[in-house]
Length: 426
Image (tube, rainbow, N blue to C red):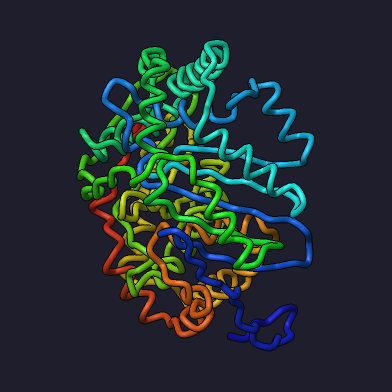
């Protein structure tokens, strides 16, 4: 698709793809993008689970456990472990998402053996020293307490609790749940979560397929055999209407959403375009123009697509004066209904497609981002050739097709809202 800049028609953008190799070793498969221009290697890996495996009353256990993996392992206490990483210029981290438990490392090629040694130690021999548990717990409790003291944190919690009652996605950590977690529970969680099987791996940088096979043979070898338990499928978002939480504050925060699409749906690209035009395009989106630029009701508003537990969810947020909440909510619903009814204009379509096509290469600017993005593609069930075909799929979009997917997916009457503050006008 050609673009016009300052009255000059530019040539069509060239297609973009990355050469993904599929590497197999010991029952594990990995995606690799090899690039020897810089002597750096990045790995990203994930198991299903994460916060989905938090027991009731122990919300936050997965995140707590992930944080403890960087607090010393084997013979190294937390200071010794941090010094070993720093001395070799290694980046190593672990995190727990709602439906996955993830690790990543980045190192110079010469330091890769040391990075693998430390990663293996962290996963197989975490120390869980009492002093480190106390420190990590205090940090987590403070974060949970702060989230309960702001309209933004309260609205976010109310949205997820109302959207998925009784399901792991609807449960967030509290100071009480974090305080109740014991060392034995952390050890049991890690033993069940970190396994030789069930892991997805992606790599990028100065490493060959043969080199990656050697890494795969070593990285997880000290972990228990088998795979972690599968995560449950996310149910449809509950049609809870509007939920209010009172919090004395000059502004209210609104968190709104609806069910979305998965990347494997044939309408994925069309829906991405429609959502960018409606709510995800920064200052070019309809919601930003109508709510901020034309009426000055907020500093920012937006919505995007969240993928978790095998489903897609559209979720957005905005903060505004309490007296303006009803007006803002009305503008959101109107914009939603207009996109569902009429789709985009030709100019909006052209801008959104050009942005999405042009921004794709910028997401692969270094090995760490590339490995993370490859892992994300794997986690959402996309095939290795998905990237190569994306420019053509975007270029093939027309106004009628985008309008059709917007009409199919967007549900103005099904939008749900959680608001915290002292809202008026609802």
